[in-house]
Image 1 (cartoon, rainbow, N blue to C red):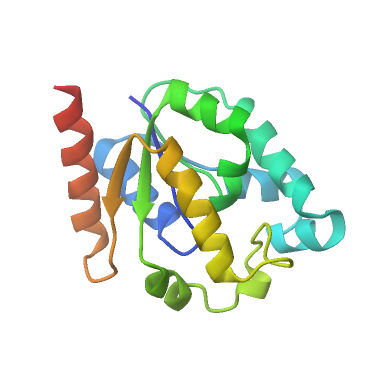
Image 2: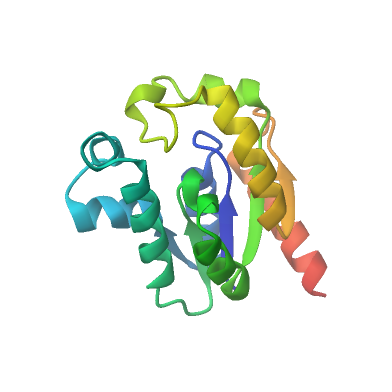
Length: 169
């Protein structure tokens, strides 16, 4: 079984994904890190120099070229939902879990959105991006796990495991 965590920047996809992978003994795959490795640039630098569409294309390519074997936790960037091809690939090859956090949590976690590498942030506010993406996250999610900010990482991992394995039984 593979698991993909989707959600807004600041929701904790990487932190929760690493903890989940460790708990299960799975491989953790961070798409943003793979893009940074491949290009030698930060996500914000990519957006500033090459535009939003380049980052979306690189996310899509990186996802589509993953050599997925069972037992991986995948953490793509929050904008991966703009690529139908990438999302269909992830849906075919993993259980997609939407980490659903209220906007107030996102705004607290993203201290400097201008340096975060957020696709669409030049044209829209963080609130507008949140609302736009919320629809897409819900569309692609196989499972939704609410994360309000008060629970610790271990609690969220427990809830994900309960949801995943409860549905497969």
